[in-house]
Length: 79
Image: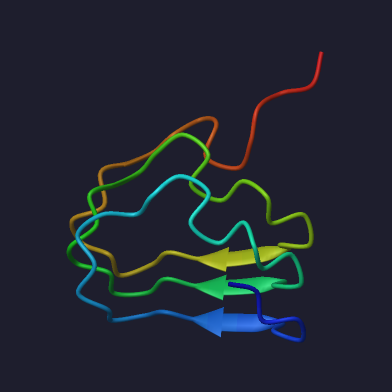
């Protein structure tokens, strides 16, 4: 589902334990994403933030269990 005018999305302090690939793909207007203190997330995998073409800022701090951010979390390199 898309929210057409959403610029900033704050999901901080949510009890999520998994972040799906393309989780926010249907919301291309998001420019700022806050995922602060997301203690249940250990990794943001391949294509975690794909489809977010206007994303310019992401905050992941104080997520003490975060172990990795996949090299392709924002998409794949273009040839």
